[in-house]
Amino acid sequence: MAGLSDIEWTDATWNPVSGCTIVSPGCTNCYAMRMAARLQAMGHGSYRGVTRKSGNRPVWTGKIILNERMLTAPLTWRKPRMIFVNSMSDLFQDGVPTEYIGSVWDVMEAAHWHIFQILTKRPDNMARILSEGDFPVLENVWLGTSVENSRYVPRIDDLRRAPASVRFISFEPLLGSVSGAVLKGIDWAIVGGESGPGARPMLVDWVDEIKIACDAADTAFFFKQWGGINKKKTGRTYRDRVWDEMPAALKVS
Ligand code: SF4
Image 1 (cartoon, rainbow, N blue to C red):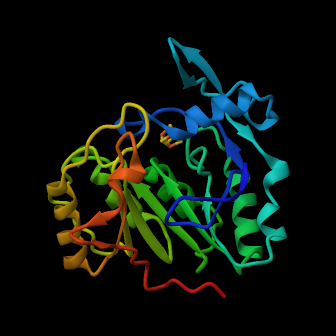
Image 2: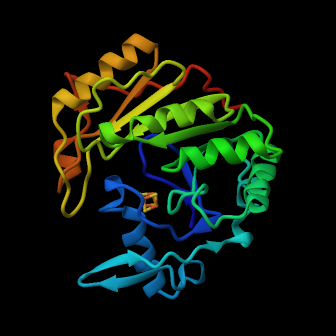
């Protein structure tokens, strides 16, 4: 899967890896797991065996596929884009060889006219692998982690340890208060409620806490959606306006 995206904070997706495993409550209604099951059912080779049925719903099997044929796709996209890396997986999950991450890095370095947004729920792995290996800090590579409730606030410290030019947090799906989260050194925060079947609610108080933390740390604030069963209906207006702030470093050249 690679191509244009309707995710509000990016332009395109690029999936050099498929398959994943659940790591925290934010994964429970994982969109990628549902979509991977659909693609697998359609016979898409990049998703063969990555999900199985458990009751009525698909779950990951733990199989990871390295989509080497997809590796060079961004080099063929001449128009500069913001590219969400591994929207269907997690580049820093156990089982992805460091050499393969190195190949992803080589492509991102060569495709310098794009911005690459890497989002992981394993920022501890990310910080360790990038610090120990030969991974240059690239201006066009942004590193991020997801935080869904207070229990996962320590991921922000892990992210700060990862060598990066731009760091961002995805508070989506926001499932609880993250009161006390400090965003110093974080360039960008995305906030969103869960959407789709079984969506869990997001309270405005939780969003307020993040907005206050953003203001205190000079962190750009992007409000993606309220979510729910019908996300078009609930919309993306927070405190009477749409918030589409981007990191100060944004520069597509
Ligand atoms: S880490 Fe991401 S892709 Fe993997 S199961 Fe969790 S939400 Fe889905």
